[in-house]
Image (cartoon, rainbow, N blue to C red; front, top):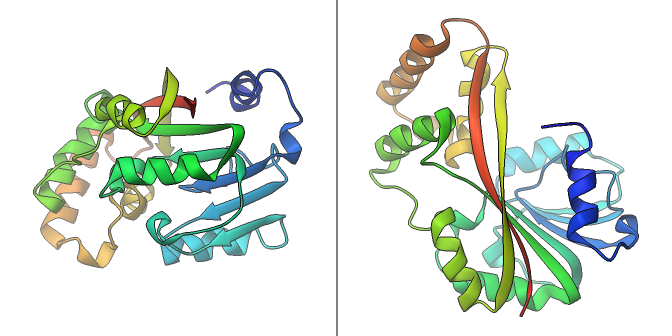
Length: 225
């Protein structure tokens, strides 16, 4: 991804231009790198205690609120200019209901930025589908190609963008350390057999060197109808 990509895109999403810095943002799937510095007022909802503690230690003193909850259990009277849902919607048991909740949290003219991976495309997608089936014996019922229907039923209009990025780690050990986040599962709940299969998969592809996966994502820029 080219330097300054998100800065350019955010200005495009919020045309006519406003002062992004003063907007109120609700973020799920909190990213340390993508949006910090663009906005002053961020409320971040992160259900993973491990990731919550990691973010909290790195962002101590920065001007945002970090809440350790699932979005389904999160309520607030606050209204937001911008809601970012990054790689999280597929976890919702009732996506239409939760999208309606998000819509109710938006200010007039507010935007929802919904980002999802495309698991049927690219090398990351192949890895994801292969081991998602092994870990859970099923795939996500809510995936990117079902989102347009969910968004329309929730009262959103939207435009769709596609993005290709890469996931790089120094070695396969570094990539395996991300498995908890990729599959939203505790490492201790992954059997040794599956861990060994993941290790073999990466070793055949990358040896003991750096790993690089193509990650295809789709971005829905949504506003109230």
